[in-house]
Image 1: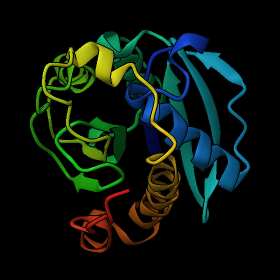
Image 2: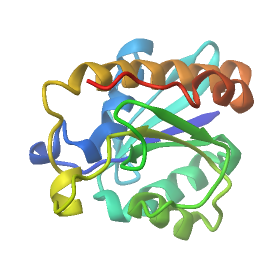
Image 3: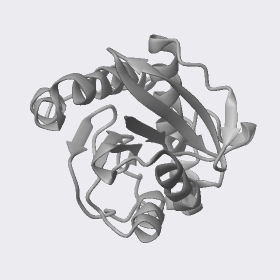
Image 4: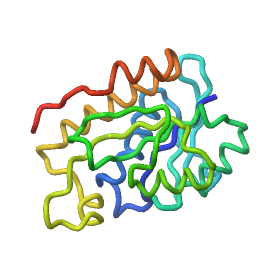
Length: 192
């Protein structure tokens, strides 16, 4: 069983912001594989279903980004999911808009959601899919930038990135993390 966690912040005010691209990716997986996000457990909105015969959990923690580990740890424990089958999807300001970076393990890279998950589960050896939201403009506050919405010019690239994330998750389940990294890392996006 795999557990796919999309990071974001609950409530309508954060919908469609850069910081909530992980939530959007989980919604994309839910729509593609007809896995309803209808359960509320482990401080998350969740769904259980199958991707090509493999049982999966989809989750959007409702703890706010910086406390994501409070949802992830109990979920892994309850369903007895090994951390090697945990896939966390989040935004990354160090990647160009729409570019993916998939890793089997690694540091939090300054991302507070990842930092909190690592703190709670006690390891950084879980899969992460980072979706580029572009670099913060000079003189902008970081919080204002990541909690802002994508301009119209970037929306097509972000829709494509969500679809690529859905395909990358399918690849992880069916062919493994190495194949997913080979297919999706380093694909350069055209500037909008």
